[in-house]
Image (cartoon, rainbow, N blue to C red):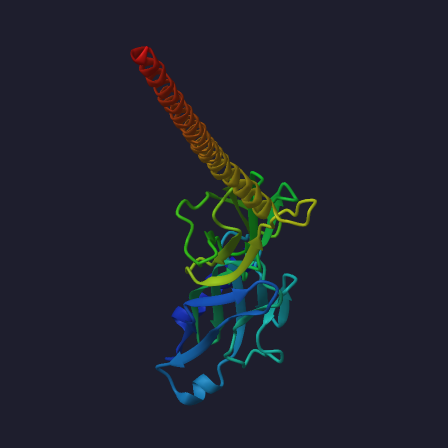
Length: 329
């Protein structure tokens, strides 16, 4: 850093005292996007202006220094014909030399720590200039994982589902039901950081037994709000001994209870009806028997009356005879 500062001062003096009308300007791309574990390129190109074309073509680069905000040491430095750099940094042009105006920086394996603002200083025999550019690092979120608790969770068990996904920068997780509708009460998303700077997003959805849904989907969105991946989880219906699911068993039990509730009153009513019918039949039979006895009695009484009348007639006849005999006497 001391040598770089001395070089800046020396070149500034030389530039102010120089007779050349040519001066240097660096054009850098303002924003650069880099993917984790991939190469990232920070584009910067030297432009010469306000001088003879011949002077611009013959201009020689004396020094190039790339610095990153927050880092004391230069990430790349060309000075006095020597090129040094931190591991993972180089000129984007493989065959770069001090005549090449493309001074772009190449990061070989981008990491979250590489995100930030970079400064490029260029010193030529025709002038000095500096410019800034920024690198934004992204890491696509992977397909989420869903961990049930308990492990054998089913439709008749209270439990939870925990969704996790890793990426960068910080995104969000959202839950959806089987109809792809967002969960009304989205659980809070917890954020952890890995050693490499990536974010681990975690969201736990609590579910209760008897829930109306058996399928849940966790979707992960990046910092821009774009969906990057999703994962679905189906809560199984625990089978019973008879091979029926718990719902089927519950339905069967409910049907049996309902049938019992229906059959019991029917049996009571049926018993009452049968009892009434038996009583009615018994009463009618009793009436018929009574009428038969009464009729028989009537017949017997009529027979007795006829016999009595015959006896009276005979007695009267006999009496008249007796009376007649008496009168004659």
